Image 1: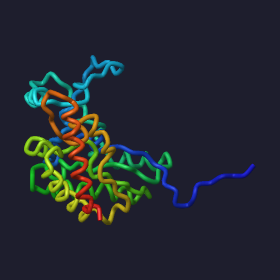
Image 2 (image 1 turned 180 degrees about the vertical axis):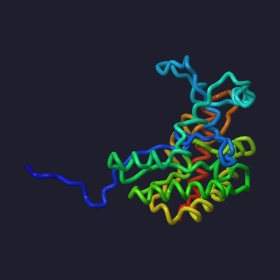
Image 3 (image 1 turned 90 degrees about the horizontal axis):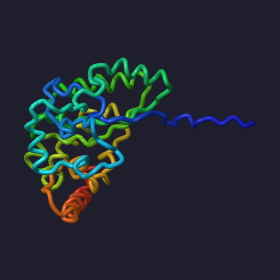
Image 4 (image 1 turned 45 degrees about the vertical axis):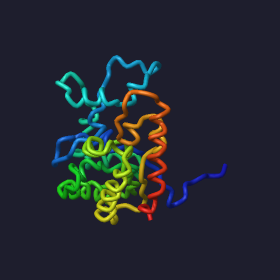
Length: 233
């Protein structure tokens, strides 16, 4: 029987997003993200999910912003990778991973509009260096369902074309600071999800109404982003 082997440069690994596993939502002056307001619903029947389970509307978003403590925001805690990364990365290596696709939290890098958080940049470099030291190739995503809260509150996310320029500012910082740690980059995770949830995919909060109108708005966002694709080059 012929023995099959992987090519020498074959990448085998796993994937996660900053909002899913980093936790430490209030560490190092991090700003809040839209993921920080997705809450756990113990009564959710996944066989009967309605639009309110995947979308935020103007009224429901205003309500969650004023939460009085009756909701559990699991994304804020994750598994505390942000603080326990050395231990976790050693486990990655132990199971044979040689690449790791993860994302950078925009709300950490820019907790407020125009503010660059150098403390977080330094911390990310420590994480990325540990990956490098363990022979793990990084595949970094710039945005994975966790737009900064300020982007949603001020611009209504990417439903406003101005948000594209804000993303370019963020991308420039990330590419400049982390270029020596990463060869492979992704812009957006599953951008097509925007047609299912404006909040998750575009950071937008919609008025309640005709979903057909809402989808037209979302499609316009995708078209606008495509026209500015030169940021990638």
